[in-house]
Length: 322
Image 1 (cartoon, rainbow, N blue to C red):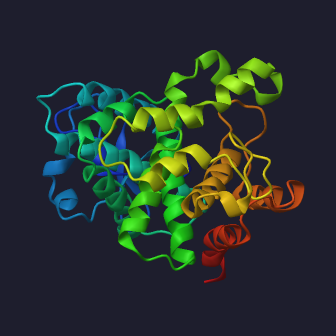
Image 2 (image 1 turned 180 degrees about the horizontal axis):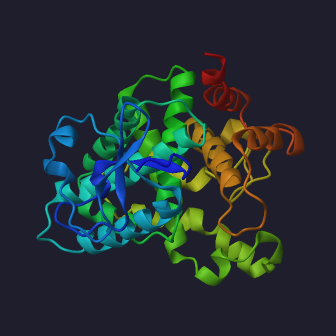
């Protein structure tokens, strides 16, 4: 491919399961900056066996117009895989890694964060390893596979932003970072019990009963995860409180900053920021990272934990000063 005009998005090799048909044309980027076709739509994937991908040096790309198709194909494959006991858990986790890679690459592509191939793999690998440590990992993967459309990718991106906020806040404890990553990944798990008719309706058009039902997804998520063994209480607190804010105007309990779990404060900021970048209801036009920061700080009056919000701004703006 010699035409550099189409927008290209980098994707993880794990998105393409060996010997499954490719859902779109796949390219790699040459040192010259040009893109070379390495897999045609409909052909069986063999990227795992190629020398360049085996050495973890390959950067695979799809056209921007094909990105959603690839993600939805992978989600459908993941939903099928997690229900089959004969499929190794490691393969199921690779599908999760592929989704994490793609969500984080999208953050890099949209200049929300600075990142290299190694940086993306570091973040997505940490998310995968965190999920893998859950004792009932197959049950957890099953829950993730049943999330509404876009929620899985949103959870991955929220987890990445949350980890970058932790980095800016100099939070280095591995157990703490694992709780943040898992809580952010699972924060919307309760949405699987909310009807699509409510999820797709703009907030302003929902009835009082529909709004109450929607807001119950936080408590529903906690109830669902209590069935899993060894889910830390901090993770449950993140899921319960990720829509709370510092001034007590969130939900479900309308609690103020001082009563929120410290880790929930981080995910609450990351989650709202990501929602502004992509509103699944179409209620408002998606914002750029700069517009989202401005909206949170000026229009809303910055109703979040000040330290966490300052760290988010550093994540978004720091690499531009390099």
